[in-house]
Length: 350
Image (cartoon, rainbow, N blue to C red; front, side, top):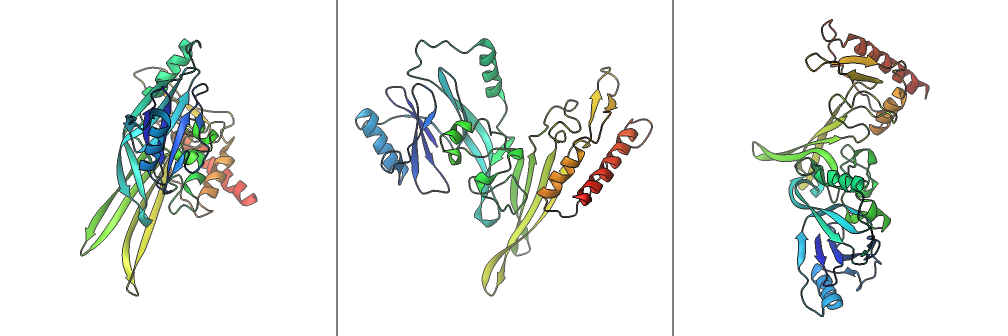
């Protein structure tokens, strides 16, 4: 994508999707800051970026060039206020291959592009609270910790049966930032951003090449710092839960025709899925584990959700809690085992 500013101060987004052989011109309304796109061939839809740029120059500056503010790889989101718009662009990415010719892109560098709304003169500026909130949003670290794919749904275990825009919202980290694109019917122009790790490498095994990919995606249901995101919350999200998978694939010959074969292993890790918390009593002693009066509440919902996500396949739960007098984790371990029994019973009943 490219961001350009016209001589009158209007911001124009230029998007060429990997899934479509066409370029779209997306205008920003000078008053509201909302995205405007009619989807008319020859007006804001063109066969190539060169044709789109020619039309843009003819429309706004008599054929003269319009300098680019930034060239990027993907739009990650947008915020508009009463006086300005802010667009987040991935300016540098690392691409790693996936089976089927797909690729996953790790964001290496981002850029926030700010532009005032031409028709916003005389409007009051953001309040101090809103201004501070916007700055905190812009300070959030994206580079190095987030990734996306333009052609494949990375929010589900491989192989995903859904298209890119059929993503699981529990693993999409820019849902709110993408809402201006969604409202304008342009959700495909803003990538689905995941948090975690995505990388792959081709290994040589004799005369053959075997590719290995590792994908770790963080669930958005209950994120937080170490002692603040513990156990289940009100939406049955386990604290800081991370789902990981390893995919191995390579091509073999079947009747003289190359056929891609693959295998995948899945695991996930999070805090114990019952209601509990850590209580910090001192900076020099270990935090105290406090178990809620109704620890199993929402537990059945948690187990049902992961049972459905993995298609009802058998799952193995590994208890990593220390069962000794010094750790203080024995009571939590017993409650965890009770939650497992309760979850299995309710799944059988359903």
